Length: 322
Ligand SMILES: NC(=O)c1ccc[n+]([C@@H]2O[C@H](COP(=O)([O-])OP(=O)(O)OC[C@H]3O[C@@H](n4cnc5c(N)ncnc54)[C@H](O)[C@@H]3O)[C@@H](O)[C@H]2O)c1
Image 1: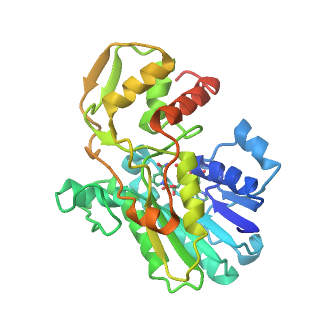
Image 2 (image 1 turned 180 degrees about the vertical axis):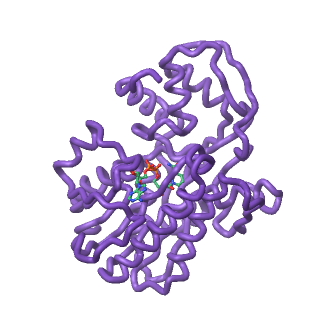
């Protein structure tokens, strides 16, 4: 267990849940964020008393003396989300790569024990989409960039470069890379399908629109993702490690997801099926053999339980109507 840990992007969705977990383990937690997205809401304000907060934009170098050395670093800071990748691809690419370069430079000077990089399932999407790999996707799937003109590819490309900087950097610290697959839970923002469905259910949308009803995903509750992240980061051994992080037990399509949420909300709207969002893969499913073998990981939170908790959080924390 670490005495001191740094979480970049610590005010964001996974970062805040990870901070809570580390605090519960007795770790001193430092959260670094530029607050471009990380929320300064009530939950963050509540946590603030128990952590050290450093406001810094990782597009700029992190001076070595800005933060005292730590045992473990969790690098979660990134510009995230399909909409942002489509609207500002150059910003996604440069921010995510610069953030990794600057963080690794700081780590080289301060010598932590382990550095965890949050990477993404989207690295496998290109090869799977072109039939060059099958699902469930393992970590060895080749990275394929089908067309450099696709703005959405900026995100996976930024993560491939970040992984390479970690893996090939000849670092003295332990390199740990986790590729998150569709993590969901309370306080995840509004740019993903689950909170969007919940928000429209709370607004009593009827007919209820489902884009790409046949598209399947395997959703992983944030508490499971955090448990896997901490387990992977804490593994002994000097060599670098790469593992998918997700939940492969309950692959579900968008229609079934909506119906599970209808049951939680006790509503029965009509359904309007619409085409899938452009560029969205039909299926995504992780092979978790590596994570199970390395960390003895098993997801614990089933989809209905996780959806209910997430729905309840959004129902209690509704934002202003848009
Ligand atoms: N949520 C998922 O399902 C998922 C899936 C794959 C990968 N990931 C990765 O996990 C990490 C966390 O994702 P999340 O869902 O919590 O996203 P999030 O957007 O909630 O959190 C990211 C945080 O990074 C901060 N940030 C952005 N640019 C920064 C900069 N230049 N300097 C400092 N901080 C900056 C934001 O303010 C935000 O608080 C990201 O790296 C993301 O790519 C998440």
